Length: 160
Image 1: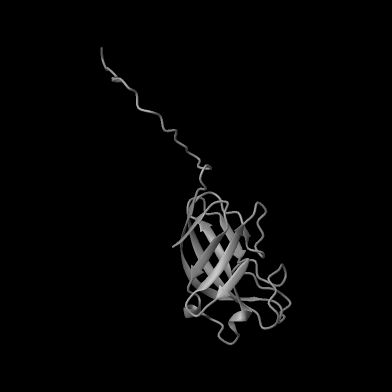
Image 2: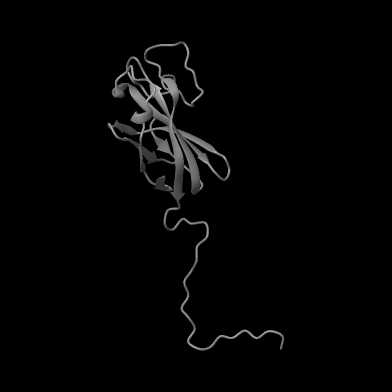
């Protein structure tokens, strides 16, 4: 399970190499498209990592908070807090990897035309799971104020 906080940067550590689809290219030719779906309102957010490090046992994807989200730079603005489903899709390039509009698919169903070595191709789903997005301290929708206990008795009488 991924755990993050609203309005902050966060890292995603997932296993992707175990389920890698396109083994004909080096790991430097692979990026991962992350799809977040809110459990409550079903809103969907996409993002590539701001940076991504593929190791033998795990992949680290860094996502940044920004008030202006950008799928290609890893800038996200996930809201509201709560539970999300995440799906991670493998995208591979034959030529130069360029994560930008027109060169990287924006969704898992996006097919870029005309076909070229510099355009990424979604190979498929490599992992999925749950994420809990907690509210940043001081920004909770419901906030409670702690009051001091009264010094005397404080009875409420009913029916008198």
